Picture 1: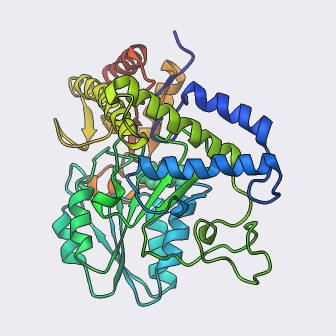
Picture 2: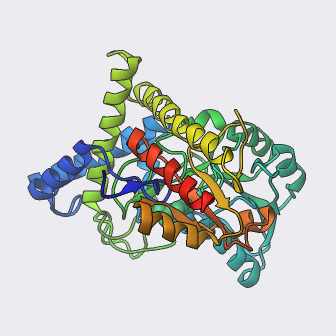
Length: 403
Ligand SMILES: Cc1ncc(COP(=O)(O)O)c(C=O)c1O
């Protein structure tokens, strides 16, 4: 018997790989100084770790440009706001999808209401897939940005970003990817897919802690600084430096956060080598193998959950079917019981931790008729999920469905 059976990995992954905890603790104790500011040995070493993490993330995301264009922030929400506010101007048009998280929906809604920016919200089919041709049809001469959520945090549907990238590349628009539900689970070759701005969060599939996220900005894309302040460089200048990463970073970074990402990157590479990437594989290649393995493990759990849930009376599972491209996250409901009630029963009676509700993606529910049940019950297995978790989840849902 476990104390908890954790199925909330789409909200944040738990646990993290052991080296992440160890390195964060060790590095924060030994090098918990202000990097890039003071010039003493410890500060230089702390900065070296940060620079190395930018390089590791660049390789992880198939970005061959300058690693200084890998920037850090508080979270994906933070970076999405920095990116969109720094790109959009009054009179512009932007395209988003109806599968987006509020991290994208709300900035877009505010643009539309407050800044004379028009927004097209491209619909997805019932399984949650956006047709790249629908994005093509929505492009206008003044379309500045196209934002796409790589995988839905409600249904798990995985978009064909390569095809969307081809469409956007034919235009002057900038493709911004929300990689929150895929980074660490699905390899994202940023350059090959034509992604201009890749927004990531640290605490989900990248196995870092909360409080760290960021974005990678392709060469030729320039985002106006949203925040200005101290950077430790060019202090005499009255204005914020233009160069990356400082352009998009002001104030002291989360050193423990970056350390967590650093250790996690090395853990990915080790896993990839252990899974057959070979000692000669570079960081990006090894991490790709690791992500293929993680994806296979996680979606294997999802398949089992779906099979078991669908065999029960009155259980509805939303989103991709059979072998459609997906990540592990799945949404379901039991009869007409409100999602939050099912979530509360799973927690109180079975110690199963799920997330019920709208998952910050209201349009996904509007389009699937799940608003009346106040959303869905979301199961998100992770790489560290095990057989005991799966059995407990299935038994718990069976008990509620039969009751
Ligand atoms: C698809 C998607 N986008 C954006 C976010 C926002 O991430 P964060 O809360 O780390 O900023 C999330 C997190 O739930 C998400 O699932």
